[in-house]
Length: 188
Image (cartoon, rainbow, N blue to C red):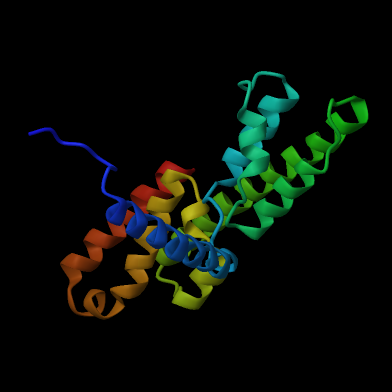
């Protein structure tokens, strides 16, 4: 007995009909979902590194294309990426100066994130109150932080969420406080 694929006209016909019915449905679904898609989570340091590598001509062959082609979730960094897309290539002195400004802006955002985390950690360690709204307003895109910063953000988030447990368990409060101190030391 020999197996053959595609020789049954009934199966081929059903396959074609399903393809014609499902393909437009998938296209329509994709178009509906596009406004809800989020960009890639990139840190300010990551964005700055892409720009610096391009300025210094040390990036890979397709790195710049990858950078300008993939939207970023954090609107502040997306504005930098979009401005970088508008720079005319090949780059002359004027275009390189524009990219240098964008690099400095990304660096400034990275420094702001780090300083804000250190300040919040210090305040929590000193016994100050940090609430969920403040943390979320300061870091609306925590997945766009550097790995070490995300860990500190997560520790702060747990600190906020565990307020009722900390109030009743001195040992637990001390444990969490030591974690915050460790995160602050790693960030400084």
